[in-house]
Image (tube, rainbow, N blue to C red; front, side, top):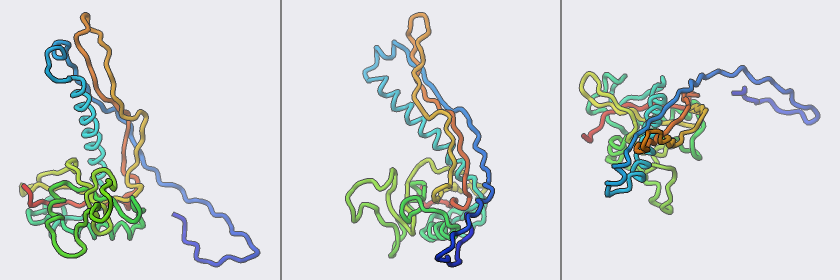
Length: 249
């Protein structure tokens, strides 16, 4: 960031240009990701369903699920974290340390204090597990969870968004990672982020690949997905992790 310019300008003098500071480097390592399945001609001829259509759905879902898992592990590896209840780390999260409005509020306050740029308008993005979202909905009182479509037309605000809370729009996703700590408590790791939280490098975007039929009788058909990409956290100041338990089993 540039230093603040608080001095007044002189009407007859031009400003002096200053040099930008040396940028901080963030390394993004490219890796290949992909998967494929093979079906047989016999399956296609004897199936009551459209095998190709089903495979297309399966491959598309697997690609999204796999990439989201990779990206979520990157995002939740940051150093900025809040914990449910009185916990100070993953190991000390107890069953009563659930997701609350106060935790969302604290994360948003930290992001604003860090001068992180919001994702949409003045709202940051909060990616929470559906079980965590249920705990948020269960809270009562003014200033609580507000459905985004309550007072406006029922057009999705952003894919997966279900509400707004304390300066963040809430996105429910089952791909929020979790782990079981030493006390056998399942700890879910939500993420609240602004812009520039994630760096992405794409050598080849995710695409469907149809394999050639190279067997003697052309009975085997292969379809899969492939990408050559990498991700890393770009600005730690634009990212906060919230680790909590949940009341929903």
